Amino acid sequence: MMYIRYPLSLRQIEDLLFERGIDLCYETVRFWWNRFGPMFAAKIRKRRIDHRSYSLWRWHLDEVFVRINGETHYLWRAVDHEGEVLGVFATKRWDRKAALKFIKRAMKRYGLPRVIVTDRL
Image (cartoon, rainbow, N blue to C red; front, side, top):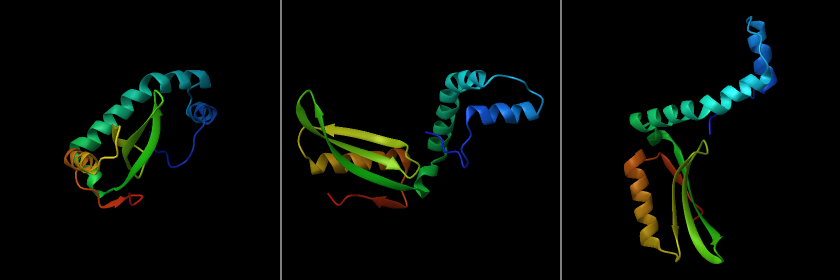
C-alpha cells in the first residue's frame, strides 16, 4: 500500500531509534505499525484524492476471470502505477458498455491519467 524507497525491517528501525537514544523492542514498532499504519495510509490516500494528483500517473486496466460460488464472473480493475487499486467492477457477462462506464466513473473520481495500459480486450 505504501511505497518506501529503501526497505526497512522492524529490527533496522529498532537500531535507528536506538542510535537516537530511544531504547525499545522491535515488537513495539510492529504494534505501532499495525495500530497507526492504516490511519496514516488513509490520510495519504485522502490527500491524494483531494489534490487530484492521480492525473499524472499511469493506470493499468485489467480484466480477470474469477469464480464466485461456482460461476464465472468478469472482474474489471483499475490500478495505478504504485499498485493501489482505484476501482473494481464485477459482472456475470462480458459487457463492453459497463466496462466503459466503469472507466469513465474512475476518471471522474480520480482525474484523467497520463497513460492507460490495457491488455487490449
